[in-house]
Length: 107
Image (cartoon, rainbow, N blue to C red):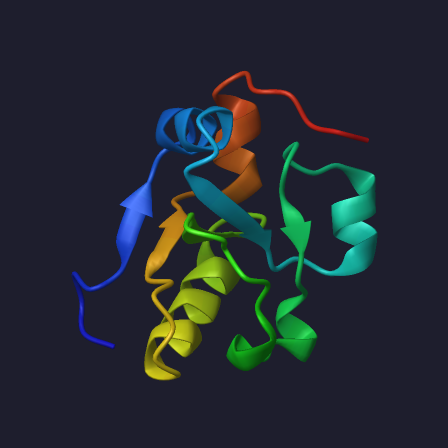
């Protein structure tokens, strides 16, 4: 994947997209990480078993990937795009950016 093809979204864009039901937030962290705290509305889909063909149906929403700091979500987004899935977006900085922005987690 060439630079610039991955769209970085900030916490405000994610929060707005979730509130308006415009995005499907896919958390690619491992289950224990997800259980320790996740963004409300996110679905758990670990990168360790990642299969773009098995992604949930976004039902008209935009798929956005998210992890702890942004590296795994970028890999997931690249894999999704390579598989022909419209998923070239992620939460830049991951859940760390979300928390740093003062946003809540579900525990």
